Length: 122
Image (cartoon, rainbow, N blue to C red; front, side, top):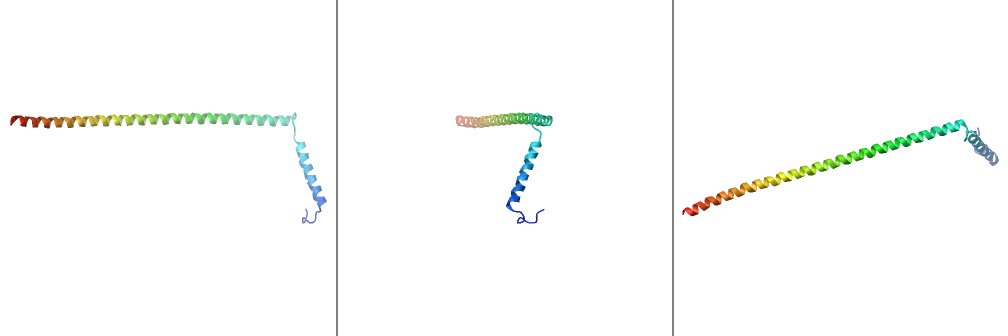
């Protein structure tokens, strides 16, 4: 263990860096490559994991689309029910106004009939 950065000179620092690079390169070269059973096994596992992930994502996407479609259909049904309720209320209001107008007209007609009888009897 070095005591200070001043203890090393430039040459020894360069040698240490070169040794570190060589160690990393040796570790990379020691890993199994194409054609090695361990490498092939690891590649097959990665491929299986990627396929499983793609399947999960596709399933999740399909479920989301199905949920969105169902929510849209429910929303449309609620809107249609609300419009139908508004039409029903409007029809009831029109019927009520028509009944009120008929009652008012009958009342006016009865008053006019009473006045007409009085003026004829004079």
